[in-house]
Image (cartoon, rainbow, N blue to C red; front, top):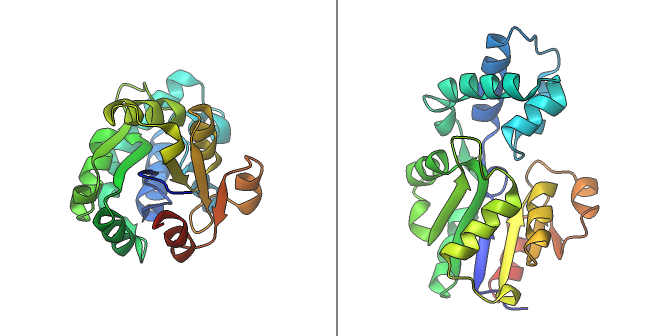
Length: 216
């Protein structure tokens, strides 16, 4: 299958944001007087919407989760944005896809303003025609909503020509809701079991395998 429109998740797919996200989550929990016993648990915050994760993993109600997000952003916008690394091979892949005339987009649950700053900082923004994330007011956090907005901004192309790439189940679920193909990547933060349960179009272990599917 040849895909002309290629949508990428950001965290765990284009970049490894572990340090910035987990340190900012720990900062927020400390402000909420919650002790973090197992720091490895904070990896679960990479990918899904923050509100969902604060409620699921620390039992916060909606109001408390919103308060925690405020604290998270205090640290994240100053430091966490840049405590991040581009996965080796991603820049080369993006360059190759653009040379082949592909239309590239970012579809992330991270607020658009933060996504844009990260992509600009790491000199990746130039490869993307569209960058869409959530809104700072807590709306458009579901991945299906984000993907829907990307497709609107791309003038609603034929869905058979579109594919979404991500490392968590939310990326695959959102793609399926929008009726597009999807790829689960195992080099990010979702397990093979998590991704396989969503029956993705493809599962790949590394960027080389991703390249072989996308560069047709």
